[in-house]
Length: 94
Image 1 (cartoon, rainbow, N blue to C red):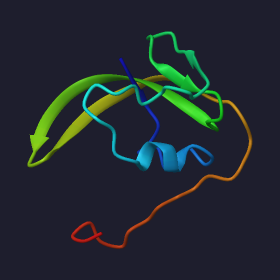
Image 2: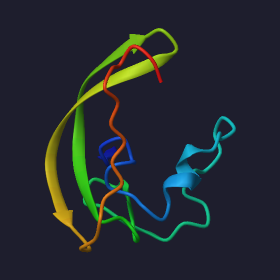
Image 3: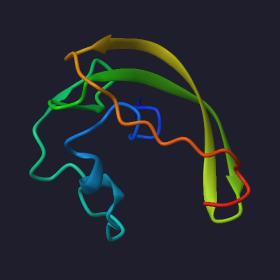
Image 4: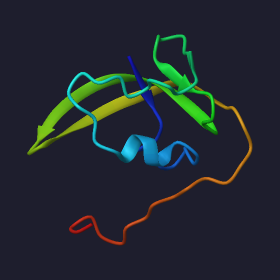
């Protein structure tokens, strides 16, 4: 079960800093965050502007990261608002 939220940054504003902090292995990333359950069982953040329910089609290990190829099957705009967009001119540095 996976909720795609476009790197979290695109669709979240108020909760962005929470998800950027490091979490211990197995730690509940959604503890103390108001959520509801999506049809696929994944969490929908109450303060998110929108959400997508995705099915993971393929996983690929890329060094110390994983690349997930997912198909969006359902989604909804929950609230109107401004999105926080992080845009890099080049993917070769941060």
